[in-house]
Length: 145
Image (tube, rainbow, N blue to C red; front, side, top):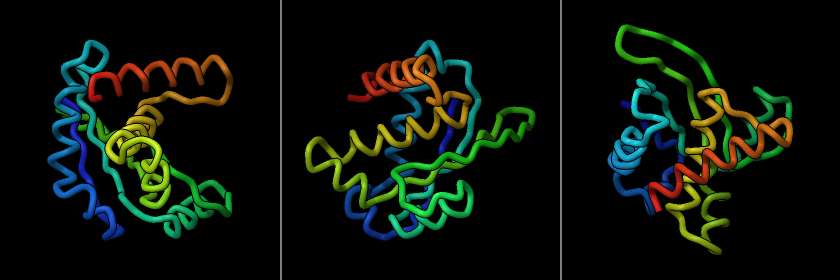
């Protein structure tokens, strides 16, 4: 089973995600039933924040002095039943802006899924890796939307 915990660091998120942990739990229950993720015992956290904090995190951990949509901080902490795979941070303003053309929940799902895939080892440093990660994201999002 995959488990996630949401921490709200910016109150504007509450206008869109009324019960964020319940929303994520429903998504993770669906994901845990898919063939690729059926046997995963992962846990992670998501910080829902704003552009200012994303810029601070991006500068502190990646030496990039600009905001970004999503950041992933992979770790691997094992205990008997699960593996804590890391933390994700997502910017409210970027999701809200992108959702003007699509849907807030779709954009949110895209970001946490992207972040989660980074936590479990996917990357997009070259074309081949980009294609693998993009296809996996698309496959997961199709389960939700």
